[in-house]
Length: 109
Length: 118
Image (cartoon, rainbow over all chains, first blue to last red; front, side):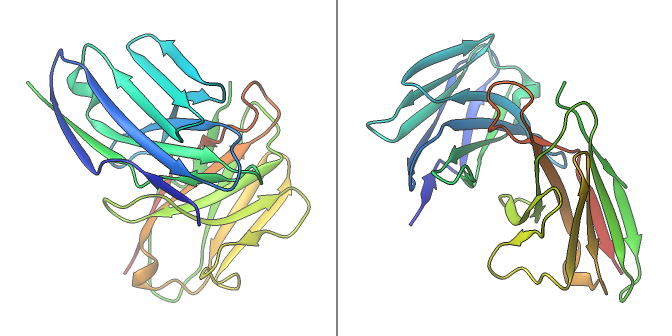
């Protein structure tokens, strides 16, 4: 079966750094997405990794290791507005998105 | 680029009525559109995948006669919830995928429609 695992909830302090992990087991792999979803809103695209390594985009970075079936999203200089759910999703061999359940990130002052 | 709109954003209806939700890709052609529903504090659940000009592919457990999907053009897909009941109350989100820019496998989401059935 196909499976995406990520922590249910994490708490971090404003100004700090947090790493949200995602492990996956899917039938084929054509890339991994991270989306951000604020409560009551639709997801918004953050990053896409298809090759191993780290992709940096401002305060957010995403890492992928295909051999380990592992990715993480790194958020630096946390701001209160970063409080949201972060969804990991893998593109399988049929180019379908397999979604994780999301990690709720709570930022405290 | 990659803007997806959804209408209406919020709808309240009586039990037994039908509700139509529109999803439009505004600045690209969406070869594939997806319909999701999401219950409070739960993950996205894919309901169906639709390709322009063909019948939608429904996920297991989703009633195709209850959730009618039409993808009549490369920029518009509609979801009609027929004979809605209170248990259909949910947040419905569409997304679109097209050959717009790398990565072309990305899905871009509409803002969602919150449906409340009384």
